[in-house]
Image (cartoon, rainbow, N blue to C red; front, side):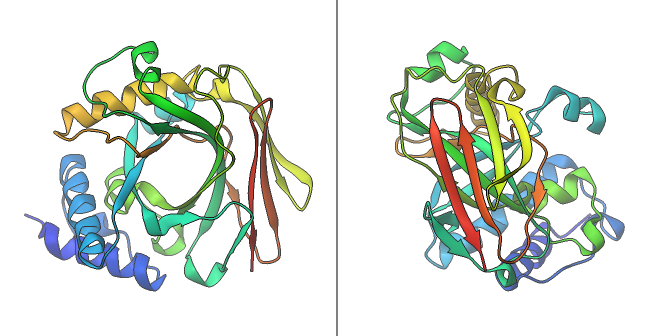
Length: 254
């Protein structure tokens, strides 16, 4: 049986030092449930260093991606306060291994949320919505990994950028989204790519929280999932996510 605490230490060190590691599943046999335990232990190490959980991110929120991966459920990871990148701020490529970026919609919760709820009920606890970007980074060598590897590595979540918050009753169902590098469109999509409507991702986050015996807390951010394919980052790029009627968010890569 795999030593989950030891594997958690490996992925935590890889993230902290931005070093590539061999995929864990090559030498260790562990389940998807074990992978979430590794993720939890790994993030607990961060909390011990002073970080605090600030929300969660959803992954594989595209039906096509779930089918491709042979899944019937999304994956999720944890966000911390130190992962937040200021809108318009800068990041250093040296802090990552294989960094990519995805345009997303973010929710800010005003009340706790947990268990099986409808998208409408989930939206009732939302204080605000915003355009957002998630910086994802797999720490595995040669970008080679299995699904449990990804989940153990905090579902690749490494950073997030939030644009200006908007009213929670803003229409987010089918908004055009453009991901730009230095003012040029590199990905184009729609908020409807997120499970048909981002609110469904929030409801799924609530259901998964209940299933995993925790709740989404007031003040947390929930990242709804990528609305387009992820784009690899490179030095000198100014990244901007523009969402129709919602606004924009961005950062620069050093």
